[in-house]
Length: 355
Image (cartoon, rainbow, N blue to C red; front, side, top):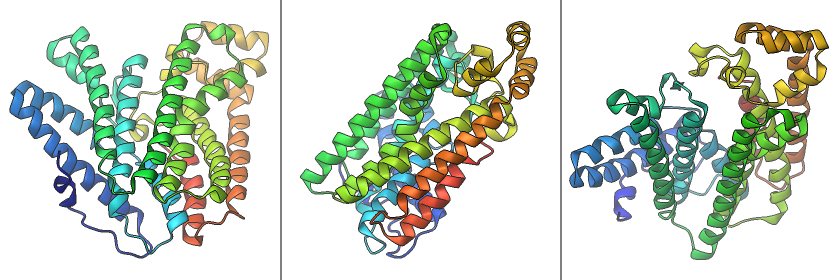
């Protein structure tokens, strides 16, 4: 695809001044929509079935979501370059993170056998309704793969000097490897929960979610700005701690969230036996009677027993401590004040959310 197809996106520029969250998300989604329109048209020209396949992938990408990864990457970039730089040259890179995220979600939903995501049927359920379960799983894998290829293609349209783009790509690749490694450990934990521990659950959370939600997007953003080693350590600490807190909140929402708000079925983690940090803490803090009741109970009873152990309160405290540590890491970092303020607000928004 030629670069000119990206240069005409609906959100031509974000003003060279403090930008609203809505304008940022609009610019990212406009870039994605234009890119996906051209990609879908190209596949549609080969065969109408491929066009339908691509449109399903497109709809999953554009179905909403928090858009946290491009948001953290933007503020990581903005913290280094300041408010005067136009964001247009880096919009393809920000959009690429959302395509990578869709790849991860589609595969994760298939592995977890989840029925809904963002209040809509998951990819494998969409395709299963057309030609059965086997087709649904196979097509979902291909949708995820397609989104990952699209992410690479869109990233290549970032208008940066070659040396800077190489550093961006290096951080992007490390992010992808960590996310896949974390996903493998997540699957392993469900298959071998007896060997799991609180510490290992935290390792899974850090690699599967925290690193590619906050830590690497921030680092990715700094690389888009040409890099600044002085901010790398502050971003690393902030990204790791806030990313951990994000996943800990996700653990709580997975058991006690409102499906009407989260868009996902309640208690999938309890149904599958996923050894999350919350569940591992609950087991560690349970009496023998509670462990026996947990093993024999249904999903609702298990959620009640976890609450009785005090594990949710401990997870809330872990979230608070991590957010405080992450915010403190920014206090002396040489980043622009508006970016510092935005990242402090994001730390709270990402870890104290209903969905």
